Length: 477
Length: 160
Image (cartoon, rainbow over all chains, first blue to last red; front, side, top):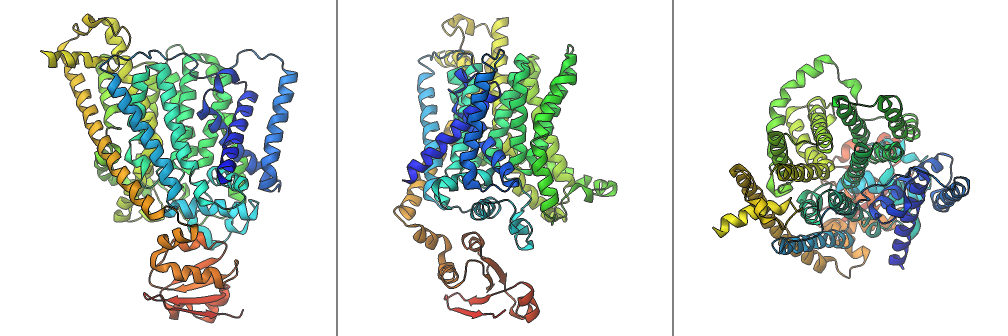
């Protein structure tokens, strides 16, 4: 019976995603073939509407039907009112560039496929049989979901009680609400069932990466880079991995999809795609605290790209950028208000504790941070060749001067994110990084998890930069 | 010679268009070949690590399967809590869901708060500091429980 309920939950998630994409003028004829998009928008919109409904005191178990009903009604109204909508958006709808394999490539391709299947199966199976063992997963995210499900409301004592401050009640609610939604389907707080949500996110990252690379490069290249992704040990068993109930893998998923959408926008400048892109940035912000900064950084990277362009269109600054920013910020406002009004702050890890003398007193930390970053990026046991590949791709691109618009954008993202990580580590006033020893421990704990968010983007950059280099050389020859 | 040729053909890792034009491959400059060797070395390294990871994960999966297969959720919790399970079961059975419990122990088992929600579990290794009437009233503590390594559990109900 549990399997049927889980199947129904995923099915309804996909239906909600499809309805939302239809409402956002997506070309549903091509999009329905991309399960990762349906899952992405389905999960995001479910959490958003559950939260908005809870603000007006609708219990979560009633909302499941209300959300589906609202989306279905809106879709029907749109179908009858706007019979034909021109300029529908879609992503990666071009056929794969090359699906043919040489005899030399076939065994490698098959080996990669076997590795991908094994790793995905491993993550699902491991999550299914083993109870949650990470403190963060249990206390920060699992407990929130349990509270929301048992109380059926966001206005609970949990957010105000100092006893629970250690579990950070002010952390965003996308994943706890997602878990609450699943509990509603299975009619109980079922940890075994909810743990499957995280491998599902992992699977969807792999699908998204494969689909994008397949449309840009070739089946072989896409399979190889997807195999690189699914064998990253940090994604499998460490703190923040897909086998724990932590939000790093879901955040990585939303960032990957947002970057793919922005790449589509750069390629085609289709204004219709900006609205779903803004929503994706909101999903990032609603998943984890740093997700909001990531959203801003992605917009900043886009801005940087267009400023560097010689023929930037005037409309980008006057029309397109405001649409993107508004669709990102507006859905975030209810959560922001709720957080500031309803949840008291406890820890002094907020920007107001950073002042000028504090900044100067902490600058020396950079001498520790840079070697630490390099050693982490080159740590084969946790990352394999994930971070060596983009460095290799960058060196080749710079030497050949073959950076395309897309690879330049991805490079900006990587640079801006690393700058943010450095700044966050240097100036962090988090209670656990006040002394030098605890600051070093703080980096050890957080940096590898931050890299999880960026790893798929790094592999996208590596794949595109290496492929483009190859193509330009061939054209020359 | 065959080895050199195979290195040239490795260029096809990312050059899948015109894969039949073998002659094209031989026009590249020498440094390009060197870079491809670097990439092949990286891939070989990756294959080695991926293989090692798969072996390691298979062993782990088998071990965990043997440990947790066909176990009820209570039995899984028993494995998870280890020595602390009797205390966990005692609190679960003998306190109301909304009780606040003060646990006197040297260790702090982080599993308790999650699995015993909505009960509030407070930990202390200092009885003198936390057993004052003022502290107990302030935190609305309903029960004080102490346990030792041999799982000798002592419970005192507090009348509010």
